[in-house]
Image (cartoon, rainbow, N blue to C red; front, side, top):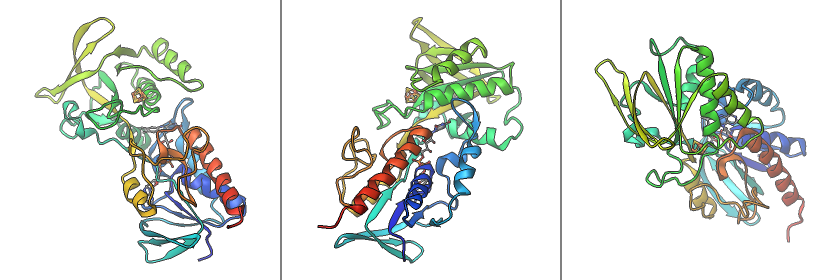
Length: 338
Ligand SMILES: Cc1cc2nc3c(=O)[nH]c(=O)nc-3n(C[C@H](O)[C@H](O)[C@H](O)COP(=O)(O)OP(=O)(O)OC[C@H]3O[C@@H](n4cnc5c(N)ncnc54)[C@H](O)[C@@H]3O)c2cc1C
Ligand code: SF4
């Protein structure tokens, strides 16, 4: 095969890096294990902070794949070092011998059913941020009649030692505020609560969105963790929490609860790390040489990273890093072999 770089993972990072490598004159081979390219971006409806449609970002990327060979529904069977190259075998029976591999395997959403106290998978009216995006995207009629009160629970499976993830997932505060506003736009009569530990509205225009959520949409922000969720005979939820700013316990009847599930390392990170003989970080994400000055380079010759494979990132951060990874690979391939 004439491809000279294998890119593993066809989400935004993998697609963008492949396009940049193509523009630099290379012939990347992009490998995606799902039936379609697009990663998580293909599942989102509208993006923070401005509410642009996710498909308006993804579609132009997918229409610009000339010169990039890609496999979908394909996994990596093995990777072995041969002199100065890597030999990659795929589940479709083909293989490639390349000098560089870019890992863009992204993240997995935290499995919300692991936090049993919230009742995901048990109570029908408890859903995740990803379920709500899917619902918005489908444009379907409301799942449940009469949603008078809805709650958003931040930090589900993030900043949580017991859940095995100490890290902040970075994007879920702003996603909660965005989804809360969207819900209020669709159903203005609904009372909307956000239960948070801290609000991490770090990006440009994020704070504006938060102020709008309070002032224009009347969203009620409660600082405190939800401790328990139960269900009555009609399927309505009772949500127990403590408002830590006012030091008072709360028990609120709700019609829906949305869990802001965080980002965890992609399932195959361990296996791919083993194949190329590198150690993932303590948090389970791929470990670059330096999170500050070398975020795309690994400790092994010819192995590179981009996007959320190395930790939580927004889409613009992911796309910029994909461009940086393409340049790092270009520099590596132009360096004469010793
Ligand atoms: C609920 C939620 C909402 C979000 N909303 C926004 C938003 O509004 N704006 C924004 O800027 N960011 C948003 N983000 C963040 C955004 O989704 C990520 O920045 C982006 O998806 C990262 O792209 P990626 O390519 O790194 O990873 P992914 O999107 O996870 O793509 C990785 C791809 O690799 C594939 N893969 C994994 N393992 C293998 C393997 N072994 N072999 C082959 N393929 C493999 C996967 O199937 C997937 O297609 C949101 C995140 C969440 C959790
Ligand atoms: S971004 Fe917000 S909701 Fe997500 S883990 Fe960090 S603090 Fe929690």
